[in-house]
Structures are given as structure tokens and as C-alpha cells.
Length: 384
Image 1: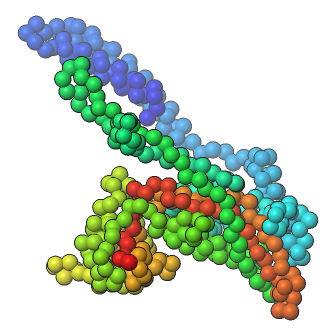
Image 2 (image 1 turned 90 degrees about the vertical axis):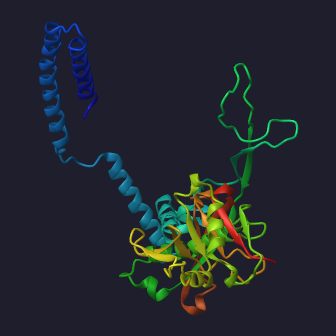
Image 3 (image 1 turned 60 degrees about the vertical axis):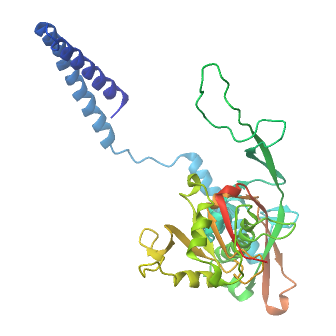
């Protein structure tokens, strides 16, 4: 229904209401009611005509037209980039590529595919909030001001109370987290026999290998981080501390308490991420009626579900026996900020693998990660 049809219906409803008012009460005016209703007929006819035109427009099949010149040019650019990268891989010829500090800069179309593949290969990377930029990035983070000499607490609505009394002020403030650019490299070694086989799409092969290596590395860093480098989700300040260092100490009650650490507003996109041994232990847990608490969900493609949320098992997660380890994370992982530079640089290592009749390709990516919102992510932490 378009805007004109909506207006016509509103007019008809208004006229009908007016006509009805003339027929209410002790002094009914039939003549005025009939006069008002007479206006409706013309408006209904206009509405039917407009409706027919609207439905005809919706059903209209657009004519097939040639692709615009911009699209044709984009396709030509993609083909050119693919050829340049193919020559680089097969012949180590970087003439068609720009040069960066870590080797040849991969064309944007190829680099975008690498970034897309990394996101597809790693659910954690896919869930993180991504910022595509180079250099240092300052991300503003909103929080409350708890200073002694200033209003405390977050901004909130409240009843006024008695007339002319002031509201109690709440004051929030913005802080920031700084994200740098750490170089992350991945190595793919390919035999010259494979490169010389023209039936093999070596461009896709190299791209897939580099994407997989970076996806694995970024997943680990987003979860665990590295001292003085990228920061992982386990560093969240939203923690459920256990007084045990065994898998048996992780109870259903402790998992429920962990889940409740994430505010309801962030629960919709929340998931579980856990160590495989913890997964095995929870998989055997039953409720009081003898039902397994972890089930397979049809909605999740028969993936595992715990307390209504999807479960991911990751080998990067620490064992429950690790002192102060975090074997279980829960929350909405858009609370993790991931900065990526879309410029991907690749450097061929020809001489290093010459005695193996192979060529190595090192792919370089600039990245950093931080916990952007601690409320979104909760960690189950074992005792020391």
C-alpha cells in the first residue's frame, strides 16, 4: 500500500466517523449522515483505481538491460587484479602490484576476498565488531562517572516527585581504548610442480592457505590475546570466579550465574565458547529429571545448545585445570573490537625453499583487538 492509498483510507474513515456522529444521541440527523456517506463512494472508487495501478506496478517485470559501464569497468578491474596476482604467484612477477614494507601489496579485490574468507572461516572473527583502517585507532567507550565531586551513576529517567523539585542527575563520560597495528604473518609453501600445473587455480590455493592461517591466528588472539600485543576476550572484567581448578568444579549453577552476568539487553546474540574437555563434561550433565542440559538445536542446524544459546568448542580455550584459566566464555562477541587493515602484503620466498623445489609465500596483515564492552562478555575463571 502506497502513501496515497493510506491517505484515501484515512479520509474514508474520517467521513464515516462524522456520519456516525450525526446518528448518535437523541437528535439524529439522517440527512447530514447520508450527505457525508455520499462523499465516500467517490473516494472508494479513487482508492480502487489507485490500488489497481499500485499492484500493476509491483507485478511489472523490468526489461533486461545491458550492465552499466561502471559494472563492466569493475569486472575488467577484477580480471586485471586476478591476472596480476596469478603472475605474481606463478612467475614471482610483481610488476603489476604496488610495493609495501612487507612485500607486494595484494590488489584490493584479492585482499577483500582474503578478509571475507577469514571472517567466514572463523565464527569469532565474524562476530567481532570490525574496524577497517591503518595505524592507531581511538575508539570512544561510554561509562559512568563515579567521581566524588561530581554526580554519580549513569543517566536514567525518574519520577519528579513533589512539584518544583530537581531530578537527581546521573552523569556518564566517554573514555577511549587505543588500537594499534600489529603485523601478523602467515606462511604458505607451494611446490613448483603445483604452480606449473596450469589446471590448478594457484591464486585461489594461495589465498585460501593465507586466509586459513590468519583466521586461526586471529581466532586465538580474539579469545586469549598475547601480552603487549592483541587483547583477548578472556581479559574481560566481567568474571565469575570459581574456587576450584577442576572440570568437576564447573556446575550447572555456576554456568547459570555466568550467563546472568551479561545484561538482558545483550543476551540475544550471546553464545558459549569453551574448551573441549569442559564441553565433554557439560555434555554429560543432566537436570533433576534426568534430561541432558546440553541439546542439539534444529534452529542451529543441529548444533549444540546450552541454556538456550549456541555452543562453540575451540581448542584455543585453556583447560579447566589451568591456574586462573578461563575455559568458558559467554556473551555477545560484538563486544570485541577487531581492527584490520585491508591492505594485505605478500612476499615470495624463492631461494629459501629452492632445495625443496618449492616457493614460500608470506602473507602479512595488520591487526589489533580489544574488549570494547565488558558487559557483553563474561568469563568463567578458575582458582589460582
